[in-house]
Length: 125
Image (cartoon, rainbow, N blue to C red):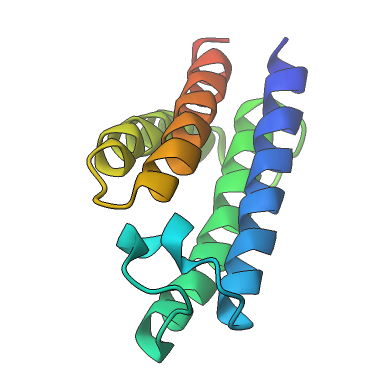
């Protein structure tokens, strides 16, 4: 169960990274991110999307480590990190849930619910 949760979480993070890359490339998908106020993201939010991609990679490493699928980080970092990610994605549920952008609420809130749940499964294992 833990392995499946980690793999699914990483696949979702890859999908989110692709989404952020499309935003960086100027695709008109901004209604789904960053509050949904810009169809095409301005430069500062594109930079934010680039930072998000780096963070998703770090998140994936923590998830894989906490699930015991890699050995790149000290155990304590993985054990604490997975709980931090669980809290982060739980906060994401709230933040996306109150977004003024209905498309962002409808897409990103469920994504955060799934990621929070998967991280919780890993954290409890």
